[in-house]
Image 1 (cartoon, rainbow, N blue to C red):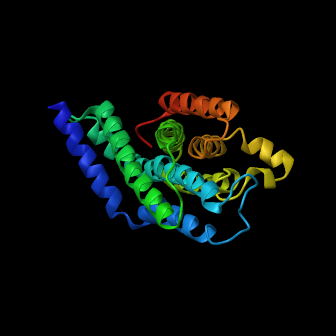
Image 2: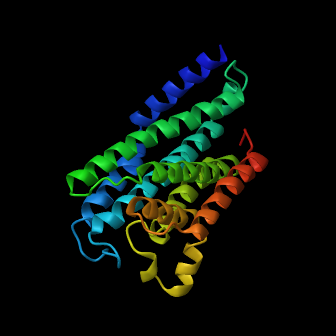
Amino acid sequence: MRRRAVLAQSRIELLMQLRRGENLVVTLAIPLGVLIFFAKVDTVAADGYDRPLDFLVPGVLALAVMAAAMVSLGIATGFERRYGVLKRLGATPLSRAGLLVAKTATVVTFEALQIGLIVTVGALLGWSVPSGLPLAIACLLLGTVAFAGIGLLLAGTLRAEANLAAANGLFLVLLFLGGMAYPLDRLPDGVAAVARLLPAAALSETVRAALTGTAFPGGEFVVLLAWAVGAPLAASRWFSWEE
């Protein structure tokens, strides 16, 4: 019974994701737009990469995860909290734990769609799909945990309007500081040092290393792991089911 409830809720969550036009813009249109646009300009070419796509595709994969797990999940959860949806669902056979499982399954399913589209578009633009894709996917799943924790922390502690502004603002900041479309080594030294402590840069650098076969960045992986542990713990500690 509970499994059916979780599966039904997951299906509903996914359909709602696909029906939200603004959600599709953030989670699909922006990452694909960044990939297609910056693949055609030389200003983002990073040292050590033969083609811009070798740098861009991993960064855009990280960007897509951030958009789905932090922005989309966080904003939707914030408004569900605002209108009492979470409270009502918590009283059904689904349970609150089941709701979180359904939301997690929805995010992972949607990310699979994102990854498939980005890899396909990258291949059409001339990117060669490397053998390191499984390791990259493992890093993306770890990033999903980290960004979902951040999104739920914002959603569970801020009012819906404030959460909307905070999630979108944080998305733009991390897009700039995340090494996704612009190399970190081109940022001022102090800014780059701060950026490397943030989950966006940690995710993009580990995914990029996995997909290009370069030395795996242990420091960035530790940063990503710390966010993947700390953010969900903080969300579980301070999340309020009612606004």
